[in-house]
Image 1 (cartoon, protein in one colour):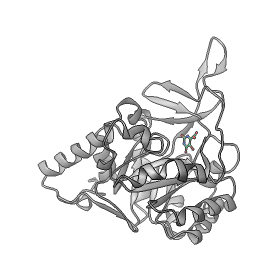
Image 2: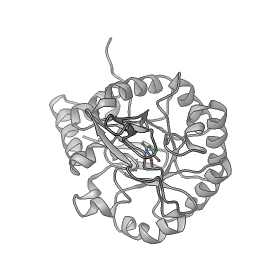
Image 3: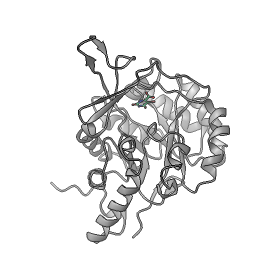
Image 4: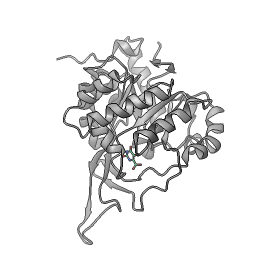
Length: 302
Ligand code: RRO
């Protein structure tokens, strides 16, 4: 059985990675699980300069979900490379760095900076964070801006490029197609869904940013539908995510058209989830006589 997935020059030995922002920069989970078992690791978003993120409270648990408005705190390019890359280089798991900026130029700068960093295998382009005021979300919901940033970054890096799509668009297929046409090697989706919660006693929002992004099992059916839509119009690989917490969830995404999947909020419940999902996928492939992801991918029957 060969469960590997190829994304440009990046080879994932199995189709399971983690969602940016739910797995720190590696060491936080390295103490808890064998991160070498993952198909790839995706780190929390990095920008050129360090940032503090939003004021607290930043997270609130809802029915079957979690609202966050972390606001992209990050150690900056140099801080990340100095503090975390030595740890990541000591491991054999491929590293996907999630990058962000407030302008096309900022995206281009950070992409170019990572192009020469040893041990970085791919860049995920975060154009879909719902929680910062300038930039990010606009790039993910306006086709013209989206094309500009993907094309701009494409020119700055030879690394596999994976734009991460926003769910709150009228037609996700437009952004999936645009990503492929602008030179992306894969797409990942979905980012969190804009949401909010209110404390009725204080009449205040549950999180300081007022609104945030909803993740977790509550969003899985929405994510699955969007992954199916996106996968139906591109030939580049799709990395599906949104509420996946079991192998059965992951297999649904693969049948819907995903080549790989990412575990997000479930990491907070059980840090071992991604490794358990890999085992569960292997068992399913064995019992169903399947030997490659391509034999199951996009095989949804009518
Ligand atoms: O940091 C965040 O608040 C955040 C980001 Br960058 C993102 O892409 N998605 C999300 O739910 N939160």
